[in-house]
Amino acid sequence: GATIGILGGGQLGRMLAVAASRLGLRCHIFEPGANPPAEDVAHAVTRAAYEDDAALRAFASSVDVVTYEFENIPTSALDVIEAIVPIRPGRSALSTSQDRLTEKDFLTSLGLKTAPYADITDLASLHAALADFATPGILKTRRFGYDGKGQARIMTPDQAPQAFEDMAGAPALLEGFIDFTAEISVIAARGLDGSVACFDPGENVHDDGILRTTTVPAGLPAALRTDAMLLAARVLNALDYVGVLGVELFVTPGGLVVNEIAPRVHNSGHWTQNGCTIDQFEQHIRAIAGWPLGDGQRHANVRMENLIGDDMARLPSLAATPGAALHLYGKSETRPGRKMAHVNHVTPLT
Ligand code: ATP
Ligand code: MG
Ligand code: MG
Image 1 (cartoon, rainbow, N blue to C red):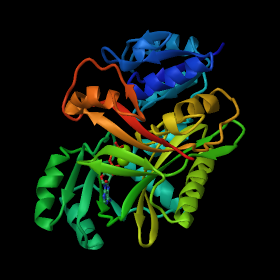
Image 2 (image 1 turned 30 degrees about the vertical axis):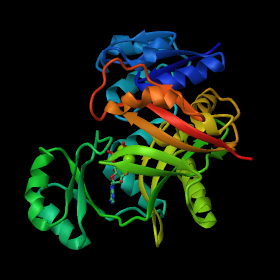
Image 3 (image 1 turned 90 degrees about the horizontal axis):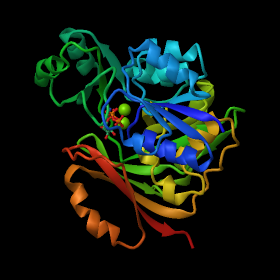
């Protein structure tokens, strides 16, 4: 059978490898860090830095296609790999989503709504943008942010200097604050043949910038549910995308506003593991391996709950809870804010 190369050995890489294994495929993980969660379930692991061209070449030569579980892969590493083997999703999806400014420019070029945004190069441009949006704002690093890290809320202009200083010189973007009624996300996939399949939008609750729960069905008017799915399909087609994509959206009285896109399987898609015949991980493997996509049909209502840090103390009680499907990442060390596991609370559709 074919071998899939995965850049990144975290929980997403682990769950991709499990899905690949069910399809008779092998996975080779490339991960610089120690004790990657994916190593327990992978066929091979390369522990090397993204600057190690020889290790990258050996990795790329051992696989049939390369995918990734996070978007901040150095361009130089991608160049080395792509000379040997295809990368899916492709480079344009990565370069678009690696930088919040490029991402917002791309989304607005498709006619999609985003928060008002401005490139921040110095304190003067920050003050100008705050005055321009006339709302509270969120200053975000353009690159490398996740789980709300690298963000500072600016409620009043006098907070601007501190927020700017907190960026420590990293390129940053100011977003106007969106007064949303809910957050939802669409997990969608596009196959090698250009076919598109969407999972049902889920409703997301964040705490301190980090995802706590995703619930399907989302409490959403039917028209917005359709809008969300069509919007995701437009993004997929515009990027000539192959694989699974996550689109995070704000629901507002004026319609849907795109927060960000993630060119990979997504935490808010974990409910599909117990809500769909083909889950997001298998869907991604199918897409990048050139298989037909599953249809995304949902056979249960699901509430996905992340188990973060000390939430792991609830494991014994959750393990005894009817309808609670546990997914542990095999991380030995618990840290505050660290995603350790998730649980899908499942109610079958009757
Ligand atoms: P992820 O782990 O999803 O990649 P991230 O670090 O990229 O997170 P964002 O998705 O930009 O962070 O923001 C995290 C959360 O902060 C959002 O889900 C939302 O709850 C809130 N948020 C971000 N931007 C805005 C905004 N412009 N207006 C209102 N709330 C926002
Ligand atoms: Mg993000
Ligand atoms: Mg986000």
